[in-house]
Image (cartoon, rainbow, N blue to C red; front, side, top):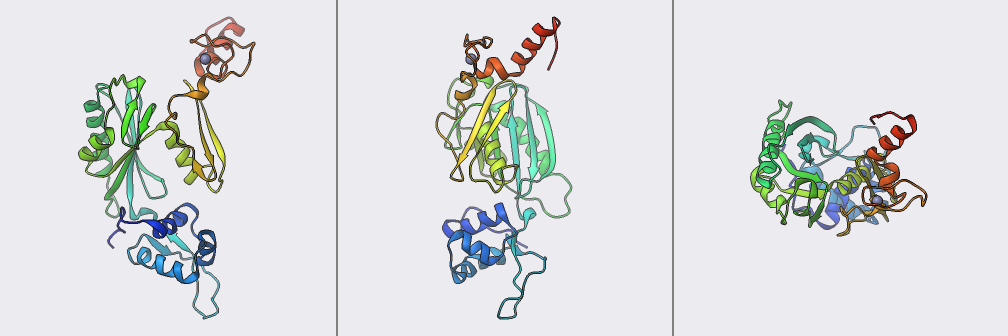
Length: 283
Ligand SMILES: [Zn+2]
């Protein structure tokens, strides 16, 4: 079976595929209602998606329609496409091979020999080759890749700030990786990427407004409202990290009293516990 074409999906066809991807299996009547389509329009839009193997009439038994034909819910063929997803930190890169529904099929990790763009691209190319070569019951042609990192990214392509990698100038990482991997590659801020994943496939699946809070070395958040990720040029700047929480709290390294970093970050929690216990404690 030839996988469905990926890029040409647009407009209403894209909306049908996306709705089934996120919420399927869905009955045709429910799908038409959700997208505001007539039954005839839905049939017309779904046919090429079914013909190409991206969508399938799932096997669960449905109710017979008035015409006597059984109606079966539509679902995606999750392994019709595979993707590489990767996260770059200041010292290593983690990569996974996933299905259309972001189910992890295989994973790999490698240290970064250097933090310059060429080293990062070379490590990601090696990880992608390793994952793409995994033995598979069926062909695992990789359709596209996505890479996230802490920092600011313009147009899902150009890293405009990545302090932990010490990149001074804008880096066209999306184009560099698209060339190196041979597939379209999107780049995103790591918190936005996490928020998108939770929105479509994670704990927030089915919710149209929620926030993701991350507590660790730093404090971060992602926001979804009206079913859309709030994606602004400020993402990655870390606006929440120094949000004031307690005017009587401890100081953060920048001198803010009681900011989110001073109250919640790993280092602050360890410091507060060490003072209280009068001995050094780790997280
Ligand atoms: Zn602060």
